[in-house]
Amino acid sequence: MLGGFSMAKKKSLKTALLTAIIMIIACTAMLAGTTFAWFTDSVTSSNNIIKAGNLDVSMHWAEAKVDPNATDTDWTDASTGAIFNYDKWEPGYVDAKHISISNDGSLALKYKVVIEPTGEVSKLAEVIDVYYSDPAKAITRKDLTDDKKIGTLKEVIASVGDTATGNLKAGEKHVITLALKMRESAGNEYQNLSIGTSFAVRVIATQLASEFDSIDNQYDVDAPLDFIMVSSASELKTAIANKNENIIISGEISDLNETLTIDYDVKISGGATISRANGFTGTMFSVADGTTLTMEKVVLDGGRNEGVTATGNLIETTSGVIVLNEGTVLQNNNGAHAVSLAKNGGGKLTLNGASIINNTSGSGAIWGGGHITMNEGSKISHNSSTGPAGAIRMVSGGSFTINGGEMNYNKSVGDGGVIWGYGSSTYNFNGGEVAYNESAGTGGFMYTGTYSVINIGGTFELHDNKAANSGAIRLTDHTSMTINGGKIYNNTQNGESNAFNTWNNSITIESGEVDDDFSYAGGLGLTIGKADIDGVISYNLSTNHNTAYLMSEFNGFKFVVNESSANFSQFNFKPATGYVYTEGDEAKLICMNSGYETYWDASTETFRLKAK
Image (cartoon, rainbow, N blue to C red; front, side):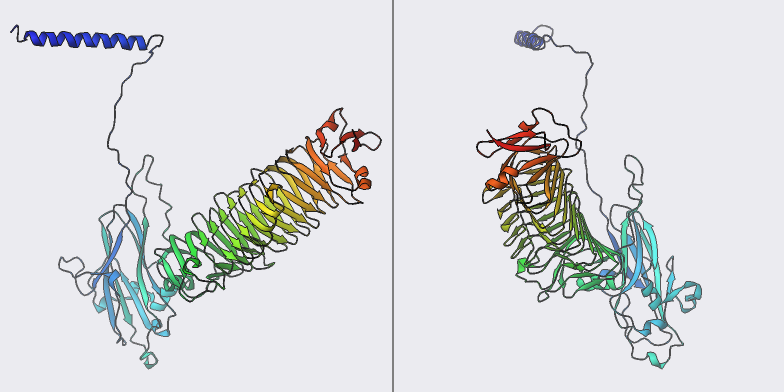
């Protein structure tokens, strides 16, 4: 031993030092040519947690003759049954209860207590007064003074207002006292009467601006409390009858057995499904003229998965407004429409991230007798028709605008894999995708005509649609179509490239991208500008309409003329006013007829055809 080290340990130390020196030399070689200009260091924070808090409110009741603050007070869970339940009321009778609202969750909340009916109220409620005490106290008859009275039971129910409101932090509770008293002045005409229905005492809660994030505690300051929560068809019917403007579906509703009429502006939301009851096949929601139904995160299921053949629509209106927001799905209606906008009624349908999917009828998932707008995130997909219009049957005078979203995988046995429209309707295709749709007849995407107007532009993409005739669009009878953006590609008719076929229409292709072949027939005119056209244009003109048109600036394209010899010789391209011929422009117009080429005829100021 030497100084506490053995010779073996000294040898081990030398070996370790030698190894370290070799590693340093190796690292230095690897880093040759690099430069370190910064001091470096690191620190790690492990086990970070992201966990949502929970909102949990409960309500209990006790007899109001006892002290609400006593430790031995007997409290009953209000969710297990009625708070007020007595059937031998007489003048002067009092039924009083303490009601305790507790915050059993981890988030601060704000609440309100409401009294609401579950049906029509009789005149007995006119002679029952409602008293309210906050804070709660043991009630005697002398405490039922006018200053504690908030109205008759009929008035309180009719107001659909807040009986009590408050804020609770996590773990806190608050107790109030409610008393019902039958007036001593009530006469014999009230004997043996019921108030006509039952009523609910309900606590509604939402998050309160209390907890702080990295900035402040105001992120949930606007969380609304003006809503009613329902979990059955009868509760939903009552909420609508009471004209609650903000209804939240808190559980699956599968027992809707009648049409619910919306005759006021209302929002229904909640992340749950509403479906028909067994045996009910009619319309689910009917929106009255001049009113608006807004749905958000609600699924309306027509019941096709259970074999229900519908005789009514999921939602219908003549001149009302239907707004379907994010998370809303209308699905599985077999036999009728998902949405019906009555013919020429002026109704409006707006999709803001909603989906209309898996519906089947003889004429589209949507009957478009009004105005339809489809925005980003929306879907109209996987619908089918046993006749025309796989998804939308447009009616004269209506309009359809797509700003975003997708219309994919729709299918029709008749014409129009997605849209069938005959009449003076307007179509604005500004964005979104239309793809993989199919028609066994004409127009894989769309069949329309008779003075309709079509505008295609922006980021709209139309691709991979197919049909027996007209892969994407079939236009007839004085329809006008303007293309000033978007992309059209990979559409087919009978397996061959085809974007659209037209007859007797006014078509302007100013810009955008058209990769597919297409054909133009009849009169009125086809005008080509600076669009990128990779497909071949087939001109099938008539005796009196042998002129095709160019804008003053145009890109090159390929074309073929399908005419008799006499008409063929008259065929020409006429540039717009302002065009100045530049040598070589004729080379932009590539004639695909064998043995022919295009030349500039200065005498007529047109491009014409001649034999090579």
